[in-house]
Length: 190
Image (tube, rainbow, N blue to C red):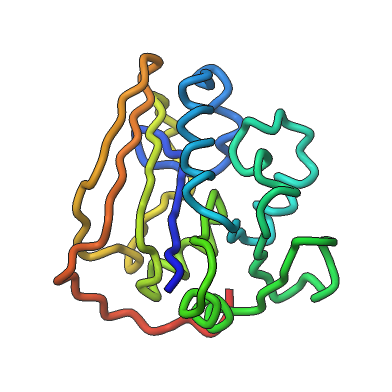
């Protein structure tokens, strides 16, 4: 069975949207090396439509998050609006959570998820996230989308690793507790 490994950039107050607006001052070689290590330990990207489109057209340096993996790792994009033929070689369009479950239950490399807040919330609700890698930046946004909102929470997580960077960024890795109780309905589509 393949695992789904979630990486999110968040502020101290839990905001996850528009990280391109606040991560640049904290981007270091140490942080880039951490992200490269995590990419080496997975073999495929799983992204929502908006994150895939933004990363593919951003022009940002490849070391910034998922851009480093484009063209190297197979990419699975979950969208009900993108045609099946979009994206080119190595890009696979998935229409719903059921397609993710089918791939996850098969053989192959682990999936790495970056950004993709709507997709991530669906994965959390369906109890499909095997590891949460949360990189907290020393920034307060005050408002914005948060990873965990009302009705969309992982019931119980265990801290399995942590790393602190000299620039104030911290990485915390969590896995679902074995006895966690999830009572969410499987979403039909993302």
